[in-house]
Amino acid sequence: MADTDFQQTLFNYASRNHRITTLQIILKNSPSSKSTPHQIKQLTQQIRLQLRGTSLSKTTVALSGEPIIQSLVQAKMTHHFGTLLLILIIGILIAVFILSRAILQPFYWTVAFGMSALTGFQLTYLTMHFTASVKQLDWQVPLIAATVLAALGAWQIIALGLSYRYTELSLLDWILPTMTSYGQVVRYMLLVITVLAIALTFGASLAMIETALIVIYTACVYYLVLPMIVSSLGKLAVTLPRKKQHSQDK
Image (tube, rainbow, N blue to C red; front, side):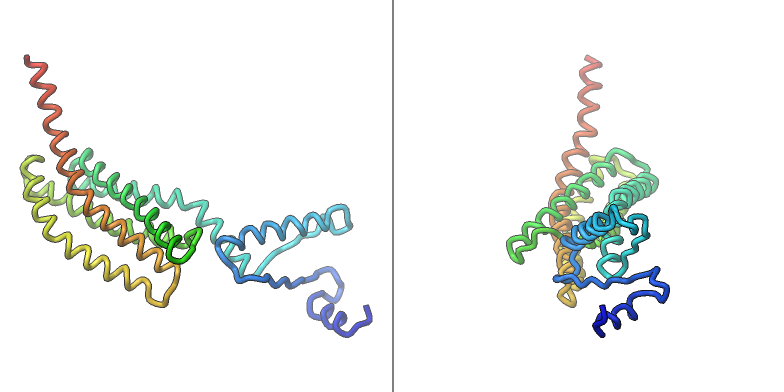
């Protein structure tokens, strides 16, 4: 108690009336999205357990520092990510419904983009797992990727919706020339998207690399799947009612 180091520590971390005390805890590892929330939770439980049954059981304990801030931000972002994703999807659907003045076909295009995005996330995880032994994507990646993909999806889907509206052609007459011209510009779109995605990797940030891979994989899958979705479901939407009407006339 009389040691000079203890007296200096008491002076640095305790108030003069000894009612407030600050303890500085240094973690062994740097903060990470995987281990930090678990360490903070474990530390909080340990503090409550140590103070239980003592005169300090009702003491207010506040945790602060970079790991705490990162853990809180991660928890809030993870908790509200589903709401953000739902708002983005609903916003894109409403915009394309209004601009194209159609519902069924734009809904198919949006669902196809959503499935392509899920595939992009899965392929990115597999790529990072086998190349860099990453067992979990950084918590920032879904938020950043969702924002970039929402802009990309809105651009593509709204462009198709406007083309369908202003060509003033029937669905079957619109499909062939649109998909033909679409296929010619896909390679240029993929080149631009790939260059922009690679630019995200500047600085060798792992989160940016994962985001870039998600964007590239999603774009590739979507541009391969979309012509099939438009052609097959578009023809089905026209031919199926015709067959039903023909059978009823007979």
